[in-house]
Length: 257
Image 1 (cartoon, one colour):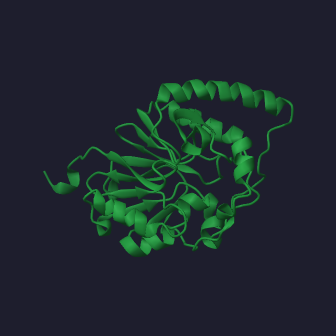
Image 2 (cartoon, rainbow, N blue to C red):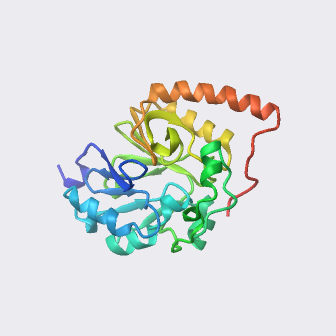
């Protein structure tokens, strides 16, 4: 059988960017490796070193998928493109941050942690801009890049947020969901500190859960079990419904470009 037709199960490997689980990128291993997310500005070398530590030649990376336009996920995309030679994929709705290197502000906190973090100067720095080589507008098959997986638009955290779903059921979810306290409480589902549109994000999360993922790999914290996330999502739906009825859900208007 020709090599191009051989099916390789996709393995998801966390790549810590800050702390052990505080900020994560993920390496997807199949016929060729794909990197999901690009960390904070200046973390490109650290990420490349960790890729190599897993026995992967960084020059073999076939694609860098950026899940959304926040500085801790696209901050080193341009640097990683230079270091690996891999094209970068990003959704059209987050082109503004990618092209300017600046996130849309103000950040919209989801709770006390977000209100505390909103003043952190590291969240307001300018990253090196980049132009996505692969412009995502809808569900995108990654077979041609060497892994059995699809990019899935999951808007809400930002307008252009995406996740990656492998054929084996692993969902690399970016900031669709997080561990509690920005990843400090392992295994406990929670909102990340910010969402541009909490209602839309929850709808995206429930859509992904309906596809039956086996595990959710997140940008902040350790992997989450789907059943526990479903129970959390049901509670969050009730909470947001009450807040929305009272006109107390903050959502960013527009935000496509």
